[in-house]
Amino acid sequence: MLKWILTLVVAIFLLGIIGPHLARFIRFGKLPGDFAFRFRGRDYTFPVATTIIFSLLLWLLSRVI
Image (cartoon, rainbow, N blue to C red; front, side):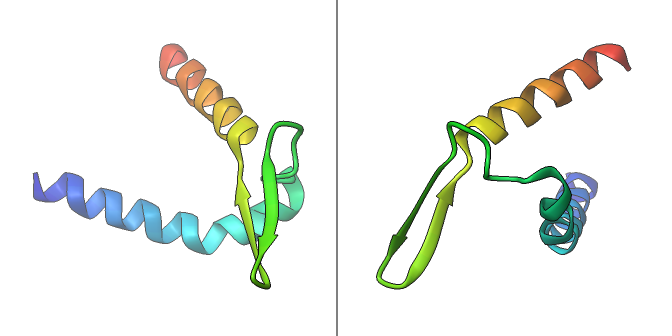
């Protein structure tokens, strides 16, 4: 159980570091179907379409492996 928690923490940490740099190349959150709005001076995004596409890609990858 401890290994899974440690793996999850490390994965979230790495995604937090790599995510903003990777977003420039794959246009994360800018696909049709992703919602973005500004409220009280802050930008909020809900990447619905991007999440679905990433989920499908991970599902396909898990089927291949």
